[in-house]
Length: 301
Image (cartoon, rainbow, N blue to C red; front, side, top):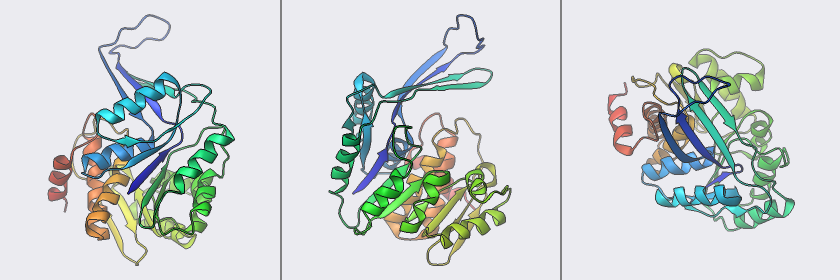
């Protein structure tokens, strides 16, 4: 079974305002509402690729109910822990001449809520996949990703971590199956600027030396690189296409990689599917379907 964890899910309200002007009444031209959060995005893309998952995390209030309902409509199972205080956050995304985002804070997560999450994690079995993705709310301990991996280290799980900075560094000692920084995030860890795939490979291997099994680095228009636990290295430019919406492209890459690996146990196929899943979603208004992804895979050099 695949489990994704989103600590601070959101109800994303995207509006198009052709000529957005601060300080006056603006009227929308188009509106869309959808569930958000990195782990949730991974679950959505996995579903598009034919893989079921269980979305875990925290929710609260009427917005939390709507997140669950929207996921249910897409055929995605969830078992979010209901938090007593506050509501799940609303993120407002304004598309105009420029893109503007206003992100909510989220509910107050109490120690007993975190304890409930650990009880859920007790149910994971050897061979399961766990995806820990995204930032954490201010009310949660900074070491929560590390603590979860320490708690689960006696189980044979495939754990993927898509996080930044200390959140990522702190888990490496527990040997996650996959980590996926982008080149900017990777550079920030080591205090360098990474501009090409050769540089990305050098620092990806340093993450391996720190404990990661497989390191997948996304680089937007520069493509991606993968260094694997068995010593393989892959790199590629991205498929050609027009970027429509880059939100969720990195999460789509994670889902594509996992789907490709679970299907084939082949790192090259997983890499290709990951890159094409990320690109296909970037070329779409929402998350791409399997047909779009496989079309791009057929065009890859």
